[in-house]
Length: 320
Image 1 (spheres, rainbow, N blue to C red):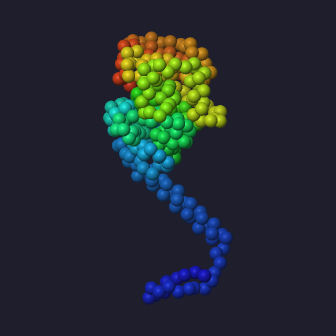
Image 2 (spheres, helix red, strand yellow):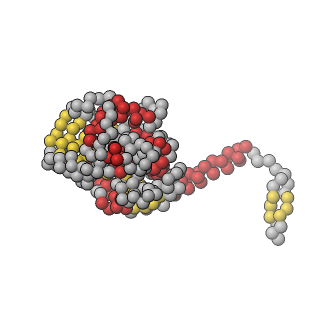
Image 3 (tube, one colour):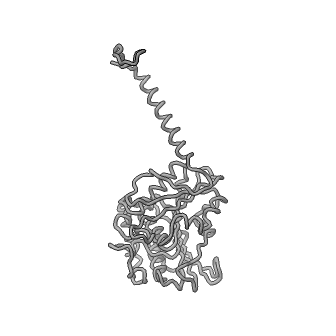
């Protein structure tokens, strides 16, 4: 029985009728078309050429805030880079203090700038909890990844060009994303970080790790990475590691532990296959461990290591 409205606004029952299956199909396809148009419109509401916060991007248990920069000259099927700030930093500070925005303008990729929800007010990332260290289990890592997943869907991002980079706490999170989400993150570049799961425990800060006293074998470090996504047997993200020899915040030993970890993940020797002096700056040394692990040690440089954004973009392949 269908219901109609008569001329004086009162409801009355009309004659009983059946809807033909073909008509139902037409309704279905019309609904799908409207839904598709609506989803496209959502993507188009993100303005080009300015930093914009995104919301309603999926599960976000710790309330990470995600900001996105979409260049005016966006490529078709572009790349996506998560640029992750340091302790006491913000998404806005990392946006204005690094060259990724200008490189996005030049090469047409998207940059996501996450903002840490650290309840202590220190602006650090949760790189210690079991949730953040485990695939789709929660923590700050899931808030970042779901923000990235949203952008991938809305802008037809090339799934082979989804990357992460960060400084200090952001470098730690880069390692976490590479370990817990190897199916999604295709490469990472970490400046002054620590190995995946080095901070594991109940506290936001881990003095044993930060002081370079968490010493493990490559196998032990590699096993930790493999535990981040139990049962996963696919490809792993290639890693670029940067550190200063005068770092007394996250001691330089962490650099060597990172090398152990990622060379084990890729089942290659801890002995470099190629070494380049004075790259990309005088006094810095680049060591390659096959095609998937690259480590740059900056002589005399403290924890505040200058980000080499151009070299990062080249390593990730966002310049092509």
